[in-house]
Structure formats: structure tokens, C-alpha cells
Image 1 (cartoon, helix red, strand yellow):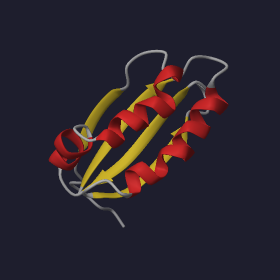
Image 2 (cartoon, one colour):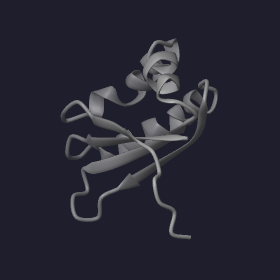
Image 3 (cartoon, one colour):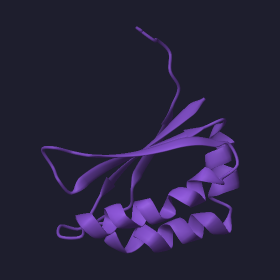
Image 4 (cartoon, one colour):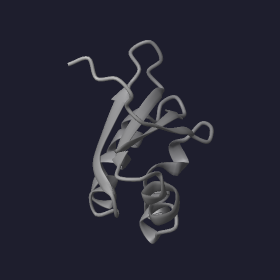
Amino acid sequence: MVLEIAQIEVKPGLEAEFEAGVVKAVPLFRRAKGCTGVTLQKSHEKPSRYRLFVEWETVENHTVDFRGSPDFQAWRECVGHTFAAPPEVEHVVQVVDGF
């Protein structure tokens, strides 16, 4: 499993609109090839900063399959106008599980 972490800075005042857009886009992720889960978290200290966590079977499921699909364009239509800057995205894999 690969975890995509996208740090997203939202234009101040558009936080509720962004959150609603993510809720609207959840079905796009649910049907994406290789996507096994999606979670959105909001920074306590910086209320316009979010982290979107998307679980993928492979990096290519995100970078090739999803980004190359019409659903990626639909995702951006739901939330792109609320971005203060392009999201910072990275992919991580678990190396230690302490539980």
C-alpha cells in the first residue's frame, strides 16, 4: 500500500466550500482504480491548511490511472478554485508499525 499525502492550502474564507467539495468528490476516489481509502484532516493551528490522505495499491494507480482519468478533472472542478497554491503531494510507504 502507498499513502498519498497532499498538503493543501485553501484560500481563507473558503474552508467550508473546500470541505463540501471534498465530500462531493469522495465517490470519484471510491471508484478509482487501486484506491482503498481517503481521509481529510484540517490543521488546528492553521485552519486554512488541510492534509488529504489517499491510500493506493500502487503509486501508478494515483499518478497514471487517476490523474489520467476524467475523474481527476472532476476532482479539480470540485475543489481547485479554493486552492491558495498548488497542493504539495508526496507518496509514502510504511516501514515500521509499532502496534
